[in-house]
Image 1 (cartoon, helix red, strand yellow):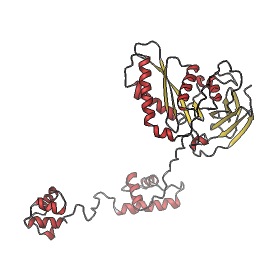
Image 2 (spheres, rainbow, N blue to C red):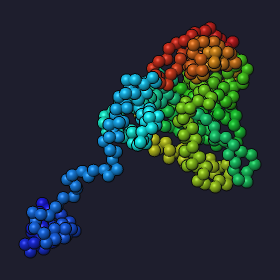
Image 3 (tube, one colour):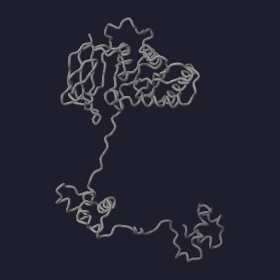
Image 4 (cartoon, rainbow, N blue to C red):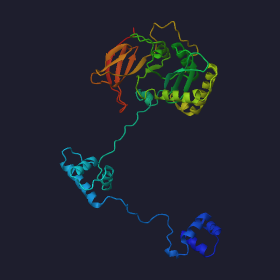
Length: 386
């Protein structure tokens, strides 16, 4: 086509007419016409790319390449260490005082060019699915809400601190945020009840091991938050401290809330902060409306439900409490003030501890991130809160 364009212009046709005829720009026509100049058309090179590959000016000579390849064969067969990679070849050439010793990078290029790299790249492990430590959550059959506090934020000109009770669902991304001056269990239950009355409650509610969620540290005692969850048949789950991944969803939302609310505005008072936080949460949930609608089922709280603070001595009707723990170097796990032997071969490893209240037993399951489906029951013990 370029040859025909040049010939058409040389025959006296205008560049505009030639460009229109061949459906190209006038600039394209001008470039190739000027490149052809006054040369014979059959002697003009009208191509963009080189037809031959230029030789690399600093390519290693064939003698050195043969030396490297030969040393590799020798080391592979005779080396006491069984090492025959670039570093081993470099050491051997240095020991033999070769007149020319290529760099490690050059040796690797020589080996690659001659097809002598037989090592396999390390294949990274796949990340486990969200909620991998709970099989029904990982499969998408059940929803889990994660909750946490952003603590000790200070409003300018206001005495004391403000804390933010945040929550987000694992699959749907349904969020909530409640600024509060006092971080108490009663306020926590109030916010949980408000959020779940509006959107329904999930199968699981996950918290960290703070006493505001677990209750007192006295053995065999459960706090108000656990009792509240059990009364609604929500299974409380407690993530292990100082472990990555388990609280990743809520920690990310904590950061998003601070970036989208706290760092953007100067708040006059607590009411101003509460209003701006409410606007942010509404916009956040609207953005996630499709995933929220397609998430696992949530369940309505009965209209007449009231959490009875004066009825904390009886065991709630809920079935299960779950703790994710890491065993110590002897295979023991500390749960609710009890130190239980899990497995002396399962040391410093993750385990899921399920307290089944009605059956009065506790089950210990092993957990492995590399194989989330491997959740073997390690041990069962008799146990009762009373």
